[in-house]
Length: 95
Picture (cartoon, rainbow, N blue to C red):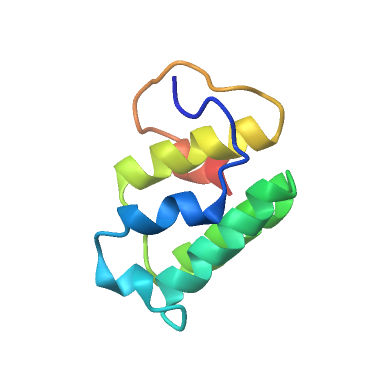
């Protein structure tokens, strides 16, 4: 449903970069994506959550991003991808 397999080669992500902000590796968003990709490749849910927490302290993530990233974190934690609910409480359980 969400992602069938988290081991996506980083070269596969390159053609889908739509926002130039993320293309700049020095930008906060680019750094966040780098850390999230490395954490997912290493199946490190704690590093994934820490990166999101640190990013969210300066730039709040919107509800859709929180929902998607929560599912990715659950997948890394071995919890699988659950059904969707509302956005309530999602931000606190993400980090």
